[in-house]
Length: 320
Length: 320
Image (tube, rainbow over the protein chains, first blue to last red):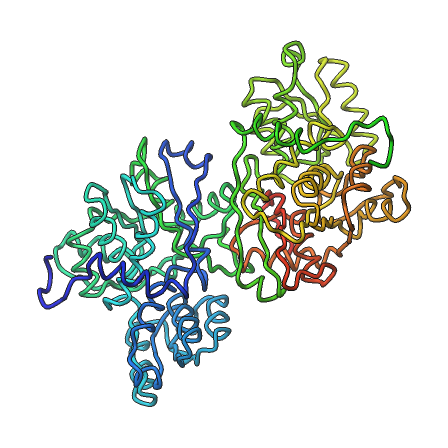
């Protein structure tokens, strides 16, 4: 593993242990195919439907894996995080299912559906500005007040291992994939999935997709150093977070390529998935399909696994 | 079997033969569950996702079964039907897959997405007024001109047997259902499904759901005679057709109850399915969920199969 040698790498065994640990708290999601999208791309596409996951996104896997490993003293003090939505909702639900109090710091401009989910799962919400320093400042004060354990959305080995269970399951369901494509935000999903995929099937090519307006992973990978994300902006609100040192180290070692797509391509891809597959995905989940439809990823005659990462959209505010 | 003794009943064997005949042309659709909807209703709900079927609705099953049984002379002359959308699209696609020409008479006010589908599958469209007599007059003239074989949307044993394969599959996937709930329009779906369900599991209770604005099946069942549908109107545009003699005879014999729901309840149910299940269903498919959420059907502690009949909606014109 390149990158900071002090970072202990997550292993396939960690991901397998996570899968057993979280099994009572998450869904084993189905894999769907779509004849129309296969015809449009020339590939064989296998969609891992994490939009059907509890709390509507893959984030439930990592959150459940982190909460399940708290010691008794930490359980009593609760957990805390900052999140634009899906990680907050997942942590809130995972904590509730395990009888732990959750505190979530959220930007006030987060999508309504995500705010409602976090509140609905019983978490205590603290509102902040939509910027990393505001999030962190508010989270600090919550932790000082409550003693809660911070569960970072992605830069945490427990989270990375939990998210990797999505690919572990996908390879159990469809073993002979040539490609695996996932969205990239903070990098937790692609890190865990790349470790699982390359461990189970070294020949698989792992590709991450970012919005053009938040392409710090692509730039960091090209530069060979973790670059800051300057004013990220995209309709894919779940992909605005910058990589962390842990996820960057994993991505450098395990991910073959990062590509970026425009917001217009994301909206087009999202609509095609709604219309042809009849499943609801959020913009952050549509980046992978956008990259394939825009020919940034060649899936022709290849068996391609795609993580449909989440389905939490505000039905009163659609992008078209 | 009550009703007209001249009507030959469709049997389980006919449905099993249909399943084998159409297998190359249709999807075996998945069954989804939803923890949130189970919690809301107290039941165990199993959703048979015919919205994922080819052409976006269960109609593909009946259409494929009818086209596959044409003799060689009929194949050369083609097939014709009138349809507000899903049957027309299904017949167009089934005919194309089997190399047969299709003619579809459609009301000019049919949803845009359904018009596009029929045209996209290569059928020749004839526009008509949105009333049964206009549909039939135009269909007559198409048939006189082309010699095409009329494939009625539901009052046809080949169609009834084909639609029944949805329930045949569902009972293979979930054998021990206590209830089976389907939408009722012209009655082809519920007729085939009820024959399959009662033949495979006599203890199962079969319930049909109609829009209040097109409740001729409920009224006909109560009256013991096939009543006309006076000016049917509902957001569930796929359920406006009246029962036919064949489907009424089957429903009298095999269906336990017909209930009706308001358009407001249909829209609420449709939104809940989109938000919580992350799958796209059309209003005609939402009637079943509406009846359960409105407590017209008691699913508490029961294992309830639900046919999600279709997912063809115009994403630019949502009902909320």
